[in-house]
Length: 427
Image (cartoon, rainbow, N blue to C red; front, side, top):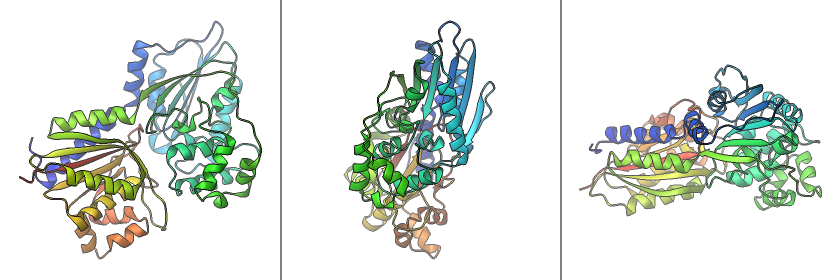
């Protein structure tokens, strides 16, 4: 297949991204694991307690229920975009990325379910990205409003997901091993779909079945070093200022990783090689979007243009909010790449796609964006200045004007972000 025109480049980029999302299918990923390693059963007279949290929770629970035997109870907490009725399970919806009252109630239900577990029971945890915001369970002394304020500060801080979740863990009853503390002495087996680059299970959904990322003091120091300490509500600062010993975990969970960004990136690569030359440039595209955009541009300029080429990236960037606009990390990254290419010129036809595998980028209905050499000109033609929109973090408006939003709808999975830069031949 020849990928020369902008239209065919767009079609190819969309196909590669779709393949990456498909590789993270939560039901298929769990099914493959359980075929080789069956779901553990409770002891005699015990029951299975299945709890699924995250954007992939309904699909993971539906598959898990096909494998469970005997007496059981099942609870799902997911985002409203990912809601799906699952026979045999209670399905609750909650807020993401900002926690809400429904999530607070869901967190209480999870704690009650875990606390009722007996030694002979078996707890099955099904964890995917988004679980951190979906089940807020503030420590004593904090309100939901405090948690929302903390989350808003963290999301605009530029901190990566691991450091954000370190802070969240020490303000929550469920994060950082909360399932283990509340569910003890019942054994816990967890199946995890990772949205964290490097697959640190302590950071996925803030690690409900793993030990904390760091200490109480580490969380406080992270906030101070990031310059966000003064923006936290008084109750959060007061809690983090307490001298609290590291949390002890009575039992360890059997944590199983069943899907990740790396697996999806490899699927994207296989798909791309069916179309043109392909290379995985980075499986850890992290940090500020401006730095990531420069890295992508430099990769483009270093590539050979004697044949169509796909340059692939996987990761999760961050945005430091300085304006009042609307957007998400993928949209801003795409717009920044388009701006760089406009200012310095990438030879020939090209298309750049940056998308969240969950289908939602920030507080918008878009998964991300797909830009090309005409993006900046189209924004100018609408009577707006792309640089001004970028300065205001208003990438969603800019990309709406250029017609470059990537709209997939909720995918039911979440393994961070995939970027595809397709370069047409310049020969």
